[in-house]
Image 1 (tube, rainbow, N blue to C red):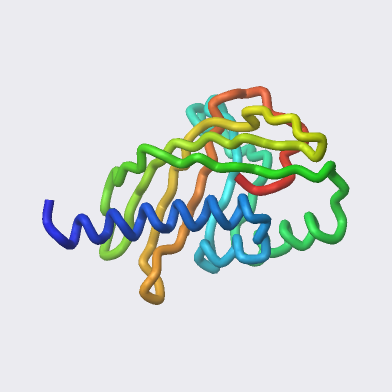
Image 2 (cartoon, helix red, strand yellow):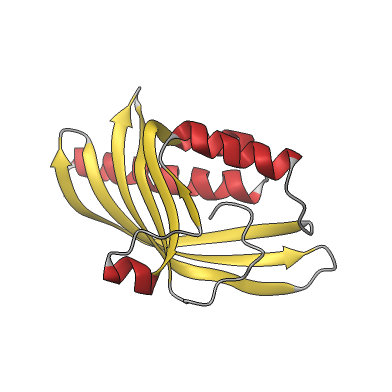
Length: 160
């Protein structure tokens, strides 16, 4: 493995760590900054993903839609206070589809802690992503959050 490949790997690992820490620290206003302007973001089940079905529990086709989602969470939606803790692992670069464009996959596990202190495994699955190099940093142009379970908690409010 050459130095450039190792450096790129460190950059990608940092992107995923920064993404998880942003969500876990409730810095949701910064979350859209991880995406390109014309991004695609979807949370779906593994069954829907495998069948090629377009349905998503959360679905957005631009950074502005992600900004609107955060605004709705802060101003309009009512949900019980909760915290997430993302564990992201097994990052794999699947393909380099062009200059500075990578198809990447990673596993994730999200622990949710409710206000009373109850902790549960909230979500497990994989990220199926397309990353592009923009302004000396990596951004998601496509992020598919593919949940292992087809039973999804109706309290899905905060992005995964």
